[in-house]
Image 1 (tube, helix red, strand yellow):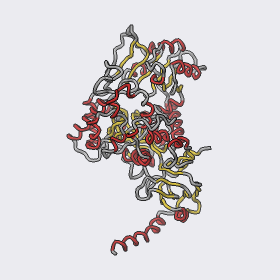
Image 2 (cartoon, one colour):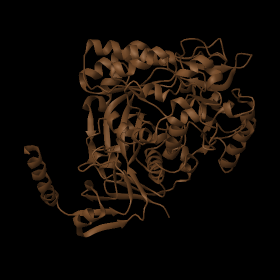
Image 3 (cartoon, rainbow, N blue to C red):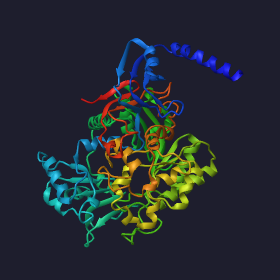
Image 4 (cartoon, rainbow, N blue to C red):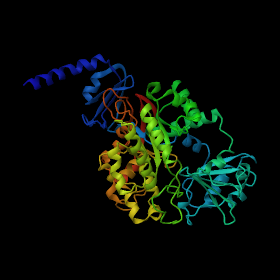
Length: 560
């Protein structure tokens, strides 16, 4: 009886507590709301005040809370989900891609050149032409291109086209000339110059060799960068994103993020990861203003977090730069590239544990992942720390014995569902029928007790988070192939897929107390969809349209 009296006392206090917070300034009714909150997983109405969720429940209750000037929206049965977060996305790279030539999806080298020609028809001689998106795995030959055709098409303009994954680029002769790259140029550590039979550069540069060409490209102006960032934010909002985790930005770019956020012109919540600052204690690291400031959370009303460091273990699978324990099945002379020394990763992990930063390391191959897990293990033995939430970004190819180590070490595998659907046509050729069992192994990891924050790695993959959701639950491409899904035993449930785009990214960014679910007290970030992605047939998921996107109770996108 004592427990019952306590319960009724709390119920009696609830309306008074809500009233003390004031009237709602935004009320949604007549909807199908998925809160991702186990205390109240489903509701028809939501009330918000001052950018925070005030109440989730029934229509009648929410209407009672509406203030005299509240915006009241009848959803007419539309679906509402918490704000969708892409847990691995490159904001400035997307903005740059939106303003440069896009060759993604090209099915031949000829198509790449045709697209560049169409885009650059009015470009003056001598001006740099940049683009992104080629993928030789989509071409009939599946072989890297060489520069000759690009050089013939653009003899007087330097042209640089980045591969879709950002881990290789193609340069024409003019670009290589201006970068002073010749047959005598040596491969840098962690990089490879693909060469012709003569030893001359073919035009393709892999991983750290990209820098040989990048150094010659004129730097973007601050105004150019600002425009690119704003364009990328608008595109993200249009597709239902309220937040991202942004790996590997430099101090200048983060400074522009801060400038925009301070002015209230940054319609995104960005969990920023600092680009590798150099060796701990080095002049470069100590000169980084964000390292000196230390971890920063929820700046500018929860629009920026600057408390993580992004490192690289290896390259990418598509360009055969991912570091493997055994050679590539389709290139036995190659086992991939290590982009950082294991000691560098361990040193930063130890430094971060002492200073409160999170360390998130790109690792795709099974050797790359093992090196990172070993480095984390060693650092944690030296500086035992609870709730560090270190992450491996991609965790793409895993040795079976390393899968349980994520849970044992408290390491979060941050993965991207659409990498699987993009790579499945050729990934098994790269690693063979045994290693593929540890590739894109979402269920194997989830069964150990970890969470998987999901993302796209845009602009490597398309921005659209509905593609992420569809891939996670079907392991099929947008045309719903292959039938039944690729290695379907690794699928996520729809509930897990939604969590992987909401509350699990929030946890991976130390944000779960204020983001990730529609829970009273958290930010009123949500997306309104025109159909119920949790119930419609798999084949109808990608027909879903974003009606509107809201951040902190403010509408940042509305479909026409």
